[in-house]
Length: 583
Image 1 (tube, rainbow, N blue to C red):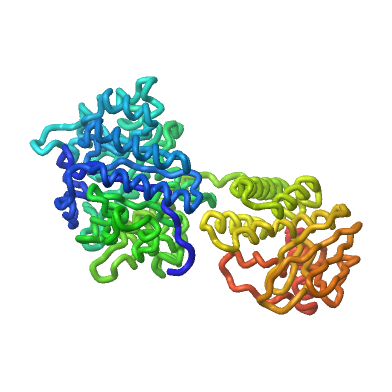
Image 2 (image 1 turned 90 degrees about the vertical axis):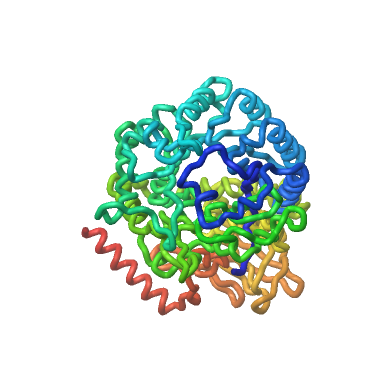
């Protein structure tokens, strides 16, 4: 895979490699990968210190606004309060001078008591607890090695987290689906505990070790989850359920909210107790060593892991799923399912999820149960799009945070002074968002073209000044031999592949452009000159077939419409309008 690295915004730090429960569905201890046996029981001071330093370096290099660290195991509370304090102190000291630190811990809750919660309160560590429902459901798998129930201890832990002092630390409950459990009873038991969030998780499985499917139902896991969804919906959705909220979000064009669904790139790395750097733990379900990278916090930085082929494979979005999934109508909601669940001994990870029928039935089932949102009118949509572009522009200015130098300061000063109808029209173009997102990505990734990409704002500023008839003079970057002004057109300055900066002077509603070789005058931006090409206008519509960011939809770009093609396109638009008017 080519393209920039996706930085890690979340790390899982294994603080203890053993567990005090003997859950028979555990993907760490009961799966094919048994490398946990080779790990030290507790993380050492050296691993803690090197991890904190590597994370701080990574956050600073990629200018990350925040990073999350999940304290994990095994059972992380087995590390004890003193060791966990050392972890929190080292991470806080190293990371917080660079960026915001979000500390979390995922525990079975058995040992959770005031000594731990007081420590977590001091460092702001949020607590997620694994609980599979009522006692009958939880005892099906989550028992001690001697068969005793863990349910009373977990309820006691949740009760502590419900106290006003500790409630801000409560992150939520994680529940692994078991078809033998009653979904309504499970959901009611979890909701009764008033968690901030519920996560329903499909048990980790692969084509090599498929999930249990008793009976003849084609999608039993979807049936189970939809029964829980119906109960959740019936009771007013009082507690957020991440799986359901994620499907609802993607169905309406929003982002996925969970690693298990959606096409967002993976940005998680695991640090084992010996300091080795691995991919996500769930890969241990696939085969021995599936999560290994060969890297270590003692020798390697996090960028080395981000460049690992296994990590890159999970960052390709739609291109990273198989052909069958790419053709599927629900792929933007399910994302091909959890990466681990695609594994087979024959095809590796290039398969649909072993839960494919369930994911399809779940997405269709939630879609059928959810009324279509009332569509806003065209003016509301345009206003919302403009507001989002303005927010992204403000974000770009904030990310630059003085690093743009005098050139950016001048552009920003003139842009804010021109705030009005002309700037609104320029920022409302369909491709503005593509440029803003590219500029933010360039800064995030430290690309050498980041400054020039951000300074493209000057072209929008000049276009706004031309539209408003506001005099100004401003240097504007150009590329590929042409200077493009959004909503107006483009001026050919040199041959393809060349780039530079030209000084643009606006006078009334015309402008002139001076570069190193000549001065070009455009008295009427709506009329062509030998070097100036205005946007195509057909039947009252403006066709922007010049904007360099119009390739943002991942399809090949056709050449500009010639006059004959523009007329034919206009006739088709006119016929379509007539049919709509008569409908």
